[in-house]
Every structure is written in C-alpha cells, then in structure tokens.
Length: 137
Image 1 (tube, rainbow, N blue to C red):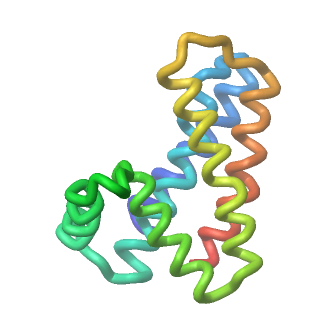
Image 2 (cartoon, helix red, strand yellow; image 1 turned 90 degrees about the vertical axis):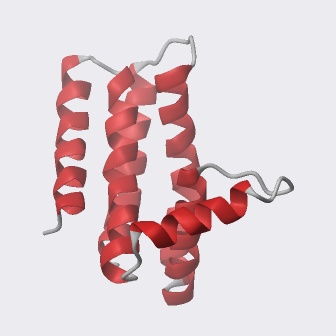
C-alpha cells in the first residue's frame, strides 16, 4: 500500500468517526481527501508520472486564461480521462460524483453556512461511491 493509499484510508476512517461524533464540517474535508489522495496515487503509481509532470500540466492551464482550472481540477480531469479510456461506466460514477463531493468540501471549508447531518452523510456516501472506482486503478 502506498503512502497516499494509506492516507486515503485514514481520511475515510476519520470522516466516519467525525460524522458519528457530530463534527460535520470536517467530514466533507476528510471524505474529499480520501478520494483525492487516491487520484494522486493513480497519477504517481499507475500512470508513473512525477510531481514535475503534474506541475507542468497545472502551469499549462494557468497560462491559458480561457481555461482557468485549479490544481485539483486539472488532476481530477486527467485521471477522469484515464478512467474513461479504460471503462466508461467507471468514468460515469467518478465524473458524476467527484464534483458534488468537491462542492461539499469547499462549502464546508470556506463558506459561512451551516453544514448539516445530511450534508455530512452525503459527503460520506459520495466518497464511498467514488473510492471503489479509484481503487481499481
């Protein structure tokens, strides 16, 4: 198991513990990162890409003002393309859910709004849909 895979497992366990304790805000954060760390694992260990490769890819989008994307979006899109080339059904699961999970994480981390039990539960459920797909790769 890679370090990123281990971190992903710990984040998912943390999300479950936090949810059960009623600490709903960080559940979205941990749920999202339990998936994003698997995305990074695929980049480094399955695709055998480097951190330098990733930085170059991100920079290519930052230099294109017509297509502004954050570093997470760039990597998620690249891994999405890889999954799509292997299995369209897996891609559909990944693509339909990762954006929703990212929105919940952003909302929980940055917005001045409440974050309910159902938001927390939704974060967990989304990560538990996405992770089996990512683990295949």
